[in-house]
Amino acid sequence: MLVVGHNFLALMISLIIDGAISLTRQLNNYREYENEVVSMVGRAKANAIFSGAVHLLSAGTSDFIRNYYINPLLRVYSPEQFSDILMISYSTFIQNLYGLGARRIGVISLPPTGCLPAAITLFGLGRNQCIPRLNQDAISFNNKLNNTSQILKSRLPGLKLVVFDIFQPVLDMITNPGDNGFFESRRACCGTGRLETSMLCNSRSVGTCTNATGYVFWDGFHPSEAANEVLAGNLLQQGF
Image (spheres, one colour):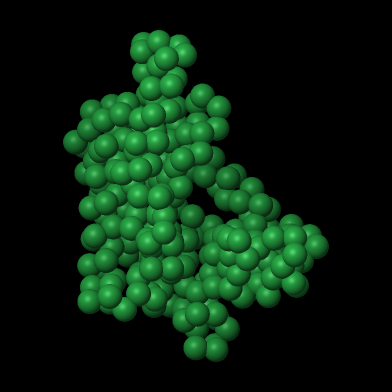
């Protein structure tokens, strides 16, 4: 969990992917931090801080791209069934976070996963274009995310839960990069721009671009800083 100031809490959650910090562990970390704040400012002020803070969650992309689509053990589930499993984890997580005092939560939807550089490389069969099947899975997931969030809001008094749609804004940057000042949307800045991510993206990565501002993607999975600035503006327009 990344904590930014006293009024903004960002939790980047991967619901069930192997190797990620478990949701239970993340909630425990949150609880430990909450206790530290209580010890510093007292229970009443701490409650006000956490209930007034904006909690930003992002989840689902790695669960599909780096887990479901490549793990044969999970292919016993259809994409719809896998989304349902993720929704159970998401719902439980939100309720637990609510139980710890969170009241203002923003959730970022899935992007067009079929257009991510790594997804095209891994699953595009050499066609070098977006994969409609993966994008449709993302749309279905996002619909479930919206419906589940509406149910949670109706059941949890005082909860302000907003789903921020990044699917269309990211797709717009990919299909019309020039409209937002970009010149490259298929290849990422890092390394070959086709697959690398995480530790494979560093100053020694061969082929890494010298200026990422013209790229929609920093690595095979994640938008560049410049693209995130565009998305941030879009989220503000959506009412963040």
